[in-house]
Length: 311
Image 1 (cartoon, rainbow, N blue to C red):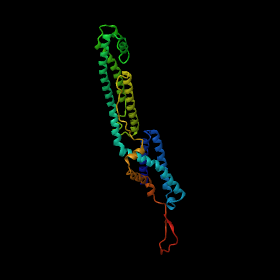
Image 2 (cartoon, helix red, strand yellow):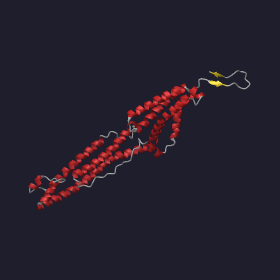
Image 3 (cartoon, rainbow, N blue to C red):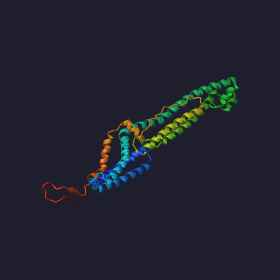
């Protein structure tokens, strides 16, 4: 029975410590596993020592052995408690919120592309009208300054338009619009490819614990990068003639590696009861271990001489 309880306590410690470290350390599996291994090994040998020394501890609770062992357990209980509370807080109190934030951010990835598409198509329609007006004005005036404007970005009219008298204004405007559209469309396709390459789409909905932190970091990076690229590309391709691209994407923090903030937010004082029971479970093999012998005091009126040890 003692071995079973000891095994259960070790397994629970292993799971709680690993999850707590994993969430706190942004999904670093190697370091989390290393820290957890140290905690579990030290806890096992500390349990064994407690059990072996129970007779000494029971007879003199203030002995050097007792003080050293309880001090070591107190020191070990700090990281175990910290990891357990953080893991439970994430699992019980923050899981649903994390999933909702992640879902909103993943929607923003595609909505941002849709807004970019709508904005540059609106600009292209306006651009085509402006190009037609300038091209027609040049046809009428042959103004050298206007020709310079049409030959430079963002218009870049074909040289043949200025050389051929019969060149069509409508055809040239459509050609200019198409050239600009191709640049923006290629960029949009590239953004969609990066979104499709995001391999953590189901991590939050499936609650894949090992990948949560990594998926969260990558999601934030992708949103920020795509937004910056859209702003820069629209400005560069249109040479500042289009309004700056704006999209207010979700910047809410997914609080996986912020134990202090999560504690303040959720105030999970009820978890302290679980922590208390958890430490009882760890110490239970020591608690139920029988003392090797107990001192028998003779009852009054009993002629038996002296006390003794009953085995």
